[in-house]
Image 1 (cartoon, rainbow, N blue to C red):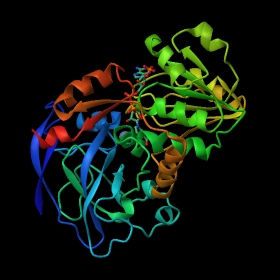
Image 2 (cartoon, helix red, strand yellow; image 1 turned 120 degrees about the vertical axis):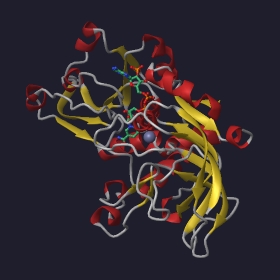
Image 3 (cartoon, rainbow, N blue to C red; image 1 turned 180 degrees about the vertical axis):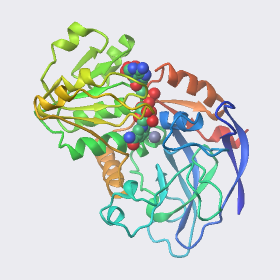
Image 4 (cartoon, rainbow, N blue to C red; image 1 turned 30 degrees about the vertical axis):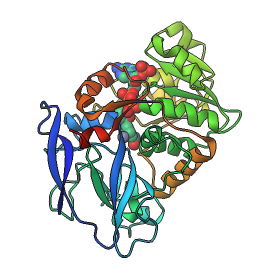
Length: 351
Ligand code: NAP
Ligand code: ZN
């Protein structure tokens, strides 16, 4: 074991503060990574503040599941990475590797998946600790290759916000000629806009923040609708092939179900804790479907990163020192992020 500086929360109310954690020394199949940038996902905030009934938080928690960094050491059996390589780690660090989900490349749905933080850590007997730290040690099967042409701070958020929007859009065959809605212009939403456009769709952003209108257009959206304006919403009834809902708080999903065409789908990736009431009539009339999606498997995450390399897609980030993380969480809650906070981990080294 060795020590690594990190930022942790000690309780739901404590906020995050500097601490020291233990990391395992790399075993045969492990890659040790010096973390250079780590994105801040709204899931970090949900989990730090223990907002999810289905996934209670064990403290202390070190969040962070959007990491890019440099490989500093590899175990003797590692074949995919060598010291000096760029490397990414997302929301998962292990799975059983034998179940039907793992065999199909859907490690995120493995019953024994280990998430990057707040999961039991079979190596240490404690919890897994995430990317708000100097370094991490991960089985090579859960480490991703980073395209060399991408700017690193904007690449870190691809490891969660990127794959979480890419995967359902691919699953529902978002393509040229389709009309696609993205609800909520935050970290996930702004990546949804970029992928929707890259896949050739006509993209409409639904936002509660009128001041994001210009940005939405700059990010590539074809149209922007202020979702609180019922007259404006009315104009879009029955016109969408697919809608991606990225909202982090309680909201009315039915107003979007009514915007779908026959056989249209709305996929929820946002994860507010409360159950969501869904109108039966909204779904029945038009054979519409309402579904969910969790991040994406490792093969698809690599596919997404390669796609981003090819099309020069990165997140729009506001880079912050780790000392500003609590402030960033407060701004996230006010939907005041353009469009992903990303921590420059050099700020932890010098702390
Ligand atoms: P974020 O950056 O905070 O963006 C969320 C956006 O939702 C806000 O910018 C805002 O957009 C909108 N919003 C917030 N409160 C709202 C309200 N009361 N009513 C309507 N709209 C509201 O968060 P994020 O990091 O993108 O994450 C979004 C959600 O996805 C979180 O719940 C997170 O836990 C979840 N998530 C799920 C997965 C998965 O695998 N399914 C992966 C990552 C994250 P406007 O200002 O444009 O309205
Ligand atoms: Zn996330």
